Image (cartoon, rainbow, N blue to C red; front, side, top):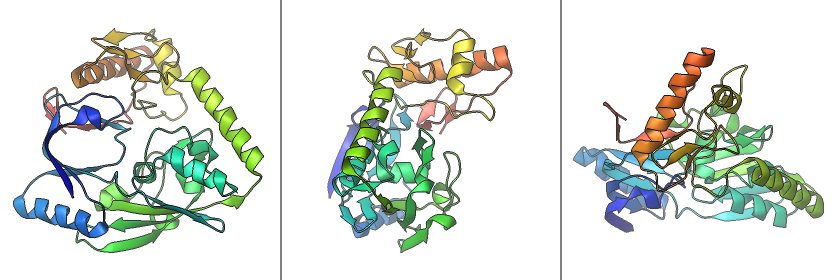
Length: 292
């Protein structure tokens, strides 16, 4: 198993910011993952499981404990109308595998910057579709080291939420139920969505995608823009000029820059519109006076 000491987390997050983790482990099998988790619990060490780090902001001080990555869970195979993907498989790769198999349903996920495991945990979605629309079952590791297979109906999938973190489960792989389709039509849909993303999203900068959850009845980007915050910056972090719902690492931003910018955006939006924004990005480490 690959284990690193004082591993900079900016290498493992899409924000490209964050200090070192005391330990960084990348198990390749469910048994290895279970063994690392058991060792952490026995030693009383904090641990946190990550995928592609695309929805994560680690503090500049880093993480005092063990980061466990599922990046090496890369099994990917299509059979019939199903696609099985390991937790570490990038969504873009899963969508392209579905395309090669002539399977439709995952087109929306092709441009989401994350892994299958993380997408399942947060029920990731885009352009009117979500993981719950195509997910058949998920194989997880529970806190006792048991491997369980859960049907989609048991996952309590909602807007950017699921039962998985509540139960302390770790995603090992997901089974998607898709539909047979025309390869050219599937490719065309993926290309159209990619063009929309390129046109409307700041893909040229490191970010975590949509930084804030969508408040009921509103759009976070519109609220931020209406508060006059398009282009607003703190240090090297900025609200994107292209899409105000994206906070970007514009110029070698620190995690502190990104966090302080997000907090100021929340404060000003609340002051302007009365709406409280909630971050979609998970905070890990020490920010301000709070420890996450």
